[in-house]
Length: 241
Ligand code: PGA
Image (tube, rainbow, N blue to C red):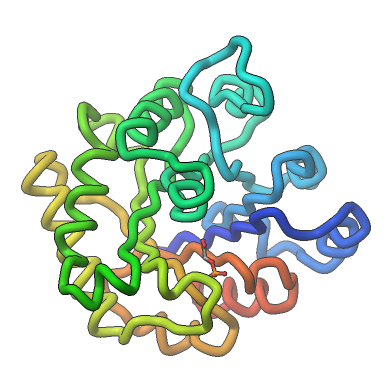
C-alpha cells in the first residue's frame, strides 16, 4: 500500500511565497497520495492547479453566525478532500477540548470529508509514562459515536508534541510500538481493525529515509519541511518509493 503524505503549511508563507511554491512543486505532488493543507485563504490557488487539498480546521456547524470559522459543508463544496482536526496547536492555543474535537469530526464526516485526527503526548506526559493513557483518552474521545463507514474516512496522525518543530523524533521502535498500540486500540474499542496511522513531528528530507523503514506506518504529516517545496518533494519521493 502506498503511503499518504500530508503537508501542513500552518500559518506560513505570504502571497509571493505561495506563488513561488506553486512554481516549484510539480507532477509528483499531483499524486492522489499527497495532500497539501495551505493556510485556508490560499486554498483556491492550489485547487486551481488540481492539487489534492486539505484544510487545517473546520467548525462543528454547517452554517451560521460563527465569525472567522469555515464549515465542513463549505470546504466540501469547494472540493477540499481532507480536514485536520485535533492538532495540538489548536488544543493548546485555542483550548479545543476532546468533546469539541469529536463534534467537529462528526460534522466533517457528515459532509463527506476525510478527517486527519491528531493525537500526541507532551514531553512531561512522556516522562511520567502517561503516553499510552493520553493517546487512549484522545482517540476514544475523538472517535466516539463513529460508525464503521465513517471510520473508513478517518486517519489518525500520531504527533508527539515534543517532536513538533523541534528536530527531535522518537526512535523508529517507539513509533512502531505506538502505531501498533493505536491500531489495536481502535480495533478493540471500535471494532475497526484497519485504521490508518500517520506519523508527524519533525519529519524532514534528512530523516525520511530512516523513518520510512517503519513497517506498519501509513504515511506522514509534515509541517515545517513541507513549507519548503524542494524539501517536501524529496520527502514525497522517498515516502512514495
Ligand atoms: P513539524 O510539524 O513537521 O514542523 O514538526 C508537524 C505538525 O505539526 O503537523
